[in-house]
Length: 80
Image (cartoon, rainbow, N blue to C red; front, side, top):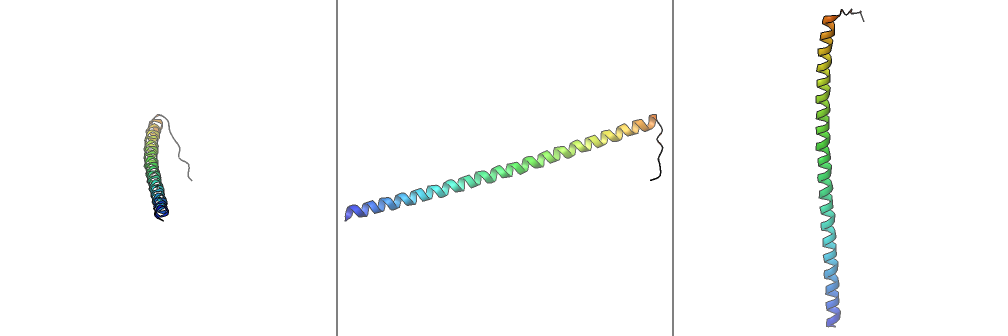
């Protein structure tokens, strides 16, 4: 009777240990994925910021060129 009891205890302990390790592994993986997704959001924000900065610079350059061209040549404005 004592041997069966020890085997049952070892099986139960093994099942509990395996379940605990599985739960920990899934939790760890979820944390890694969450961090990865958050870093993606930060990268997207930075990319968007850089794009807006470039567009602003392009707009300023376009305005500067227009000012130069309007000094050199006359521009007629037509009624809309």
